[in-house]
Each structure stands twice: as C-alpha cells, then as structure tokens.
Image (cartoon, rainbow, N blue to C red; front, side, top):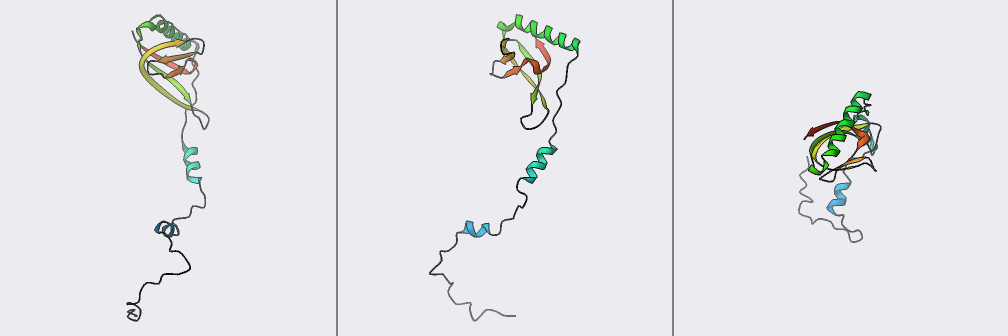
Length: 134
C-alpha cells in the first residue's frame, strides 16, 4: 500500500490556461440523469381520479328549482347556503364535486350563476344540491 509520502507536501496544482470550475458546476457533473423527463408527471396525471358529472332526475331538478326560487325571494337577506356543484377538470375528462358554504349575494339570471358574498361564482347548471338556512 502506498502512503503518498512522495507527493503529500506538494502544492495543489492550479491551471494557468483553464479557469477553475465553480462548486455548482462541479456538483452538476454528478447529478442523476433523467432519461424520461416528464414521465413521472405523466404517470401521476393519468392516475389522478376524476368524477363524472351526475345528471339529476326530473323530480330532483324540480326540488332544486324550488330551492332556487326561495333563495331569489330572500336574496336581500343574503341567506346562508351550502351549495354542492360540479367543477370540470382543466386537464382531463370529468371533474370533482365541491361544497361551498357562505352567504349568497346575488342570482344572476342572465349569466346563470349564483354569486356568493366572497365573489365565488357558481354556475346554476352545475349545482346538484342546495341547503338553505332561512
């Protein structure tokens, strides 16, 4: 086994023609190589589960319309409501159901949205359930 006694006291060599590599660039030489860049993200996206939009039966639709009519009569009171509605997914088919609870500010019949006091707009056609606190 060699003990390096012949070179241990020599000064560290510094090149006169090449600049010394930064620590960041030096470390980059040893970083792992990802041959399939984006593959993990694609697999994760494909595995993400979305719900299908539910279609309400006629009697359920009538009950929902009745609740919306009652809300429109009490809109000046800014009633407290819980609304469950469908939010379409931006990247794939389907979406998810969200329940928003808060005070209702306005029913915009021209654009067909409910507007909450915090500014959230809920499309009426996406609503599947309304719970009233009147």
